[in-house]
Length: 289
Image (cartoon, rainbow, N blue to C red):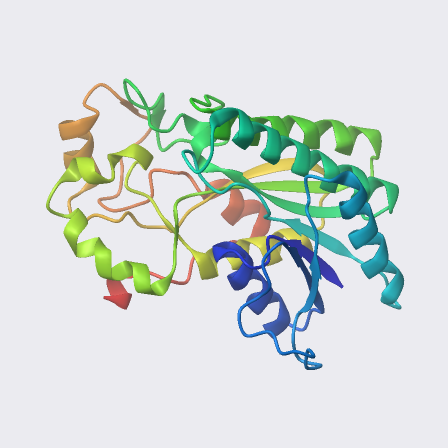
């Protein structure tokens, strides 16, 4: 059994679907009931528990309850529940909700000896919206330059993961720095981005298809590694038809280019995820439109 917090969200829905299609039993923890869930649930439906993950007691009760109902126990946790973007609440609320909920999930998992955790960090840790431009491109996992309370909360999650993994040498905690998540219907907006290169410069013209985000989550759960790890997760291409060199010359002319760039490659490096997880994005907006 895999538990997914935030299973009713954009990435959560894709994650639950992908895991179930690959033979996993899945339990979703959220404050929002999954769309289409039958009442009473069908045997093929996702198991759903309503819980506030900012409340440690509720998290512990939900995880232990699910763990106790499943013969083989819970084998992994995917933590996606959070305030999902800057500006969705006051800064202090975003920081409080995201850091406390992440701590609660990590600590409840530790107490229940669930040692396989994947969670949603964020591309914002790289320095979005890049005042003065990124340090270099492609940006990679070495960069830690949060600019908002949201990105700071995600960096704090990465630092917490390091300590929880240190406390138990057998634990794996993988943080995925997701780019801006898109669903198939969102690709209808992409032609409009071509009109102004500054419309999407805030995240270096990158994106992640929710289905590829789900792939990265599943591969992380299945990875035979221990310790705390962080991976940049984006699609392999940009949202633009203009080449990277032209975009950078126009918007970030002083940014260092670590190597010659392919015309439309992602400026968030996914090399580490490809090498260590076997991640291969499958969904390209150019083919979808």
